[in-house]
Image 1 (cartoon, rainbow, N blue to C red):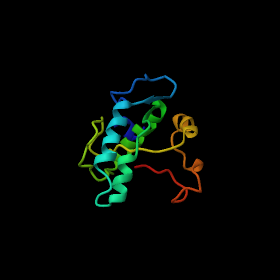
Image 2 (image 1 turned 90 degrees about the vertical axis):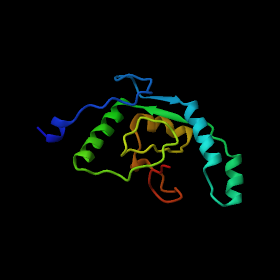
Image 3 (image 1 turned 45 degrees about the vertical axis):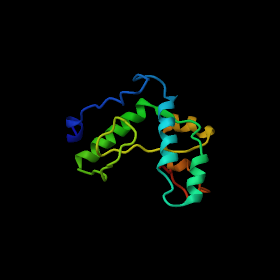
Image 4 (image 1 turned 120 degrees about the horizontal axis):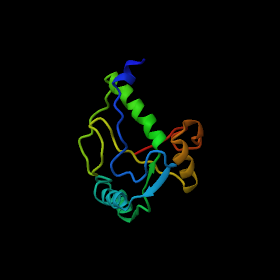
Length: 144
């Protein structure tokens, strides 16, 4: 038996998830997160560039959707435990403008995509093989 599995404690999904284990993957719109991101976009961006500040002031967050996929959560949890077993920890994020259930060595990431791609992401997660070669920075999956 792998030592990782003997010490691995099953971590439940975030407390704010609406779905239960065994449910099909779901996508939930979150108005709270949309409002928080709209605030951050308008108040925390663009530094000293007036043109960018003006653009940010006009920008609108249309929607924010949270993917709830228990199978992918299990994969994430297993990989996280593996990395922690090897003491691999990313740089600690010091600012938490948005309340969320994250450990100190985790970060909340956002991914912009087309409506057509949402179902594929919901079912299979992010797949580098499906990424578009015509992306601005080349093939890859991009987050902010």
